[in-house]
Length: 147
Image (cartoon, rainbow, N blue to C red):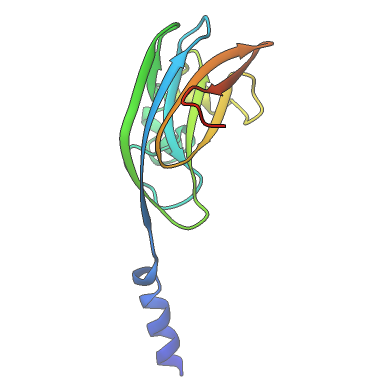
């Protein structure tokens, strides 16, 4: 019985089922300031191109004085993707947006509720968003006809 338990624990990672999902996102900056945007996930596995600022700070603290993500100037439209990632059940892709061009270290001070941080949960496939400043807070509207 003991050997069965050990074997089961060793094989558990091999039985993990990841689903591959692809995202292609158009983002238009309708604010008066630049936006820093990138993709993150709310769970494992960690993958290149899906690393959140706090993960950079933990894994490579020497990089926290650098910028994170893609900068979109006011009035500009940029496209992210296609980006493909591996997802466990219950893990989601998130389009993370920060107002301005803060460093990774500065981003660590942005709480989820901060008016200059916006997290948009994504569905696989193509999507488009208009990012606006509404009453001093970043907000978005779908621009691809979806609700």
